[in-house]
Length: 136
Image (tube, rainbow, N blue to C red):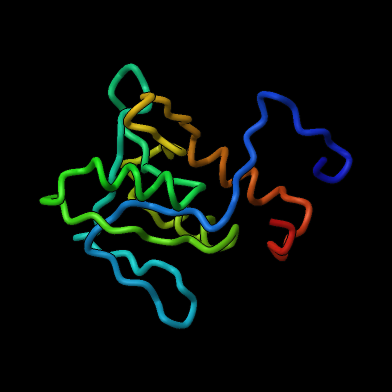
């Protein structure tokens, strides 16, 4: 139960830390936030029949590592940790605008991907019960 709302069978519960597969990134040592630059690249699988891509995000480190193992080493991808709701909101607000979606917990074996509009994730983060982010 979250607040006074029951979690249903079709509800998705986001957990932290969240992981991305990225390259050419640097994080701010003081905040842990990613420092955006033009060379920053992400794994971004298709999330829509049209081929539109979403930034791959993993709510479980093991899922991220499994996906990374199946990714070509030549891509040079590494795990990027996003520590909590505030860091995720910061990332999503500053992510490259060409992406409208995040692809949550993509699995190369089962081909299951949950695509969420970035705007919807930001709205959910803005509307969480504890504005300090300590409820996660």
